[in-house]
Structure formats: C-alpha cells, structure tokens
Length: 499
Length: 122
Ligand SMILES: Cc1cc2nc3c(=O)[nH]c(=O)nc-3n(C[C@H](O)[C@H](O)[C@H](O)COP(=O)(O)OP(=O)(O)OC[C@H]3O[C@@H](n4cnc5c(N)ncnc54)[C@H](O)[C@@H]3O)c2cc1C
Image (cartoon, rainbow over all chains, first blue to last red; front, side, top):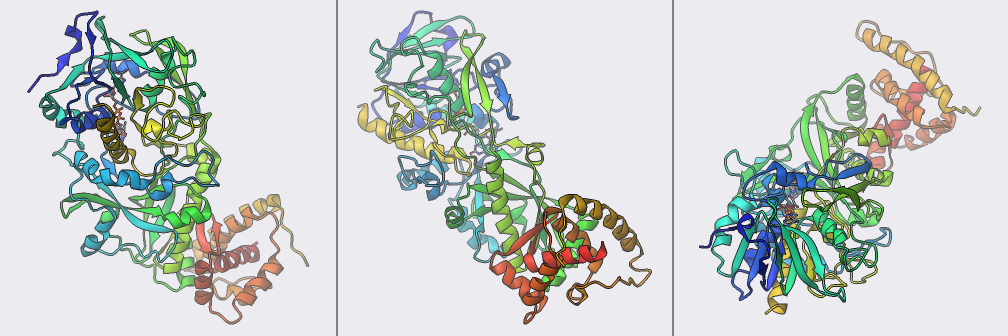
C-alpha cells in the first residue's frame, strides 16, 4: 500500500512524467483511477484539497454571480478528496433515452452518444455509488406489499423510483474520498498528490497538445507534470476556469476556438411547494414521502413525465417528489368538496401534500462563466457566472403538473393545485440541485461542442474532460451515477488508446 | 344578450362577491340559503354546494377577459343533456379538457359551472 503524497513536500521544480494525469479527486477522478487499476498505465492524480475540509483551499472556489438568483460558487461544491460527494444527497436515477436524443423542438439538443452507449457501465457505476440491489423502476413490483402506487391511469406522468447511495449511520451517502482512499492506495502504478492545485494547462507551441501542467500548493511550492494524456476531472465549473485561464498559447483559452467553453451552464432548479396534491381516500403509500429499505436497496418513489409525454408535448424532463402534509384552507376545502361531489367520489378522508420537484432547463449559451478580473490566492483569475432562467422552463414543468392533475381526476384518485404562476412566484425561495452541468459540452461537430463522443477536446490531441460539464442537455435525473457510467466508458477508451 | 366581462369589472365584482360569500359561508349551517333566481339555476342545481363552487368560480372569471355567461351556460347545458355531471367530468378528464381555477385543475364542465355559480352570486 502506498501512502498519498502531500504536494506541499514536493520540491519546487520537480517534473513528474506519468502516462496519465487526472486533475481532480472527486467521484470522477476516483472512479477513473480505480478503473485503470489493472492497467500498465502510470497515473498521477492531482487533488487540490487534503482528506478533510480546509477553508483556505475552499476559498479557491469563490467567484462572482450576476443575473438570476443562484448559489454562491464556493457553497455548491467541496474542494477536498471526494469532492462534492462529501456533501451530496446520494440520490440516483438513470437518465432516459430521450435525454440523449436530438429533438427538433429543443435547440442544441442531441448527444453524440445514446443511452445504450453507457447502459453497460451503469451496474458498475451503481456499485461504485454503493446503491445496493439494482432495482430502480422494478422496485414497484416489490413495493406493492407496502401499499399501492397512486392510480394515474395511462397518462403522461407515472410513478418511478429513485435509489440512494448507502448511508452509514448518521453519515450521508458514499463519500468517495473516505470510502475509496484505501483502494486507491493499493493501486501500484497510481500516485495521489493531495494539496496539489493544477493552475495551468500548458499547450505546446502548435496549440494541439498539452505538454505540461503547472501545479501549485497554497504553501508556495510549484512543480510540473508532463503526462502523455490528461483527464480534467475538476467538476464543470473548475474545468471551464482552467481551460479559459490557460490562455498563454491560444488566447481564447484551451479548447475554446469556437467560444463554447464556459457556455451552456446548467443546474436543476428546485422550486419549493410547486403544487398541492390531494388524495381523496386519505391513503398514500409510505414510499412516496420517505426512503424505504427493501430488497437490499434504499428507495423512494417520485412522479415523472413519461418519455412519450415529453416527446408528444415537447416538454423538458422533471421529477416530482411528494413532501410534507399540508392543511387545506377554506377555498381549498371548497375546491375538494365541490370536485369530489362532481366526479362522484367521497373525499371525507382527503389528505394533502406539498410537491417538490427537480426541473430540467433548456440549454442557453448565454448562461455562462467568464473570467473575472479578481484573482485567487494562487493567482488564478476567478470566475463570473452570468445566470439566467427562462420562463418557458417553468411553463414546461407547469404543463407536466397540469397533466398530473388531469390524470388524478381521470382516475378519481385525487386532485392538484398549481401553487406557482408568475416568474416571481417561481423564483421566490428557488433552490438548486447543485448539479453543475454544461460548460464543456459534448458534440460531434467542433463548432458545436468542446469535446467529442470520447470526451476528447476537439482541438487538443491529449486532453479529455470528464464531468457533467460535457452534458449537452441535462435531463432531470440526478447526474452523478450517469456521469460515473460515462467515466467508466472513458476508462475503456483510455485502456485501448494509451497502452 | 352578450355578457362581456372585462378583467377590471371582474376583479371589482369578485371583491364584492368574496365579502358576500364570506358571510354566506359563516351562516351556512344556521340558515337555509335562498338564492336570487338566475338564468342558469337548472345547471347550478347540479352542484352540491353553490357557495363553495362560486368561490372557485371567481378565479375562473378572473382569468377570462371575455366571459360570455349565456354562451357558457348553453355549452354546459348541451354537455349535460344526456350525461350526469359525474359522466361529463369523467369525459372531460379523459379527453384532456381541464381548466385552472385558483390553481386547481378542474374538469372543464365543472370549472364552467363554478364560473356560472360565481356569476349568479354577483
Ligand atoms: C449539496 C450537494 C448535493 C448533491 N446531491 C447529489 C445527489 O443527491 N445526487 C447526485 O447525483 N448528485 C448530487 N450532487 C452532485 C455531485 O456531488 C456531483 O455530480 C459530483 O460530485 C461530481 O463529481 P466530480 O468528480 O465531477 O466533481 P467534484 O465532486 O466537484 O470533484 C472535483 C474535485 O476536483 C478537485 N479540484 C478542483 N479544482 C482543482 C484543481 N485546479 N486542481 C486539482 N484539483 C482540483 C476538487 O477538490 C474536487 O475534489 C450534489 C452536489 C452538492 C454540492
């Protein structure tokens, strides 16, 4: 077992020459390093942080925001081994086939790969997330012992399932750093450098190859890594920053010949109390409101627009969760009594719940990061986020909720009130998934994407970007498990190409 | 006679109706409520609680710039000619004919009945 190396003890001027440099030790960097364990490749993993949180390192994530309300850049991710998995929620769900498709009604849609291309990696990704028995939508079969699913007929919204990463007592789900530290230490040709910040991707004079990476510590040490290939696994925001800030050879920044790096940023908006769900007979199975452990997995049901509904109605993806019980005011009670009588059901025992959601946003090139004039403690320019959210995104989700309301009436199971109408309503108390996506989008055409289907930067022969930044559209599924599947596919590609 | 509502008129009307409805709800169980006759009493009789329906109907009226009560009543009458309200609302929901009233998703026939109830109360 080889210990991790503290970069603060590496003499300045040192030059490392691994086959592959992985920049970033979050779920992506760790999963990739684990997948390359049995190859002859010499790998150096450079991680900015140590094994625990450190405020000075975390401050390197600070940046500015303008436009629509959004989280502070340093609060929505963590900068130490394990990355943001040190505070993730562990929610997992596969993306749908439609999420990968080009849709005529959705500008900028279409991945250069299909869901099938990553499906075969999903079980291993699920295992790395410690998700237990792979059930997802098969869970419904077993959950019926706990009570029926909400009767929704054949409409556009159906019950589907989230699965969760393993909990450890009071601890949150799989923290990749803690969980896999020993496994990483057992890999003979892997060296993990902690407190090692990549500060520049050094292109060769022709601008077609990364020749060297500058590395700095907060204690003032500086050294270089000269790998055969590089995988940038710093998360979507930091990947854009490193590429834009490395502008000594190509002035627009690495891989940015077509002014795409930093653009199309996205996250999943999570508006609160979007709707009130009334169940007429007062019976709701517990798996809708609380995680349940069964068949070796932790699961919770949600309500999702079907692929057919999304296609037919040109709506974006979303997930709906049933949250806390709510009381009905006089008008709501009148609505329930009047409707129940009109459709011929007894609502004497009716109960009501607040609905939460995660929404997919439409790709927007102007929702973007640019370099700011401020610099961080290592002298790197900070980022400025230009945040936007379109009214049409809220309208898409409203349409899905309306369909759910229709289905409840059709099946006479309940009814729905939409609680948010104006832009101000939606933005009031709006939360976000902390799912940074889209800054280094994937596309077969170099004019439309930063990386190709193998995650290789179009204009650079040996630089890969592995992160949710490569998502050209975002779906509504929790991103990490799908990302890890994509990274395992990259591992296979690297195994073939770098030997 | 065409009964055209502007949004402003509706809002002014709605304020007044809300105050009346409040008094009615408060006294509902003490006094048997008598309603002033309206041209759509035959339809409103299908509602189990006209006052509750009127409250919901206010929102339907507030959202329609141009509510033609007579035309709506004729339309609803036609829908209910050979169907019970339960049957008509089932058809509405099955065929995707739903409307919003104060955010509530209602079968269209019911939402229009509610609007007529609000109109009758104004
Ligand atoms: C509060 C919160 C809750 C979340 N909940 C969920 C959830 O329930 N389900 C889900 O699917 N996803 C969730 N996510 C998202 C999930 O955490 C990310 O998708 C995932 O961590 C991405 O992994 P990554 O390795 O690409 O990036 P990160 O986790 O961000 O890791 C990047 C790593 O790179 C290092 N680094 C950064 N810059 C440099 C540099 N210049 N040099 C060297 N190293 C560097 C960082 O220290 C970090 O360790 C959540 C995120 C947050 C913040």
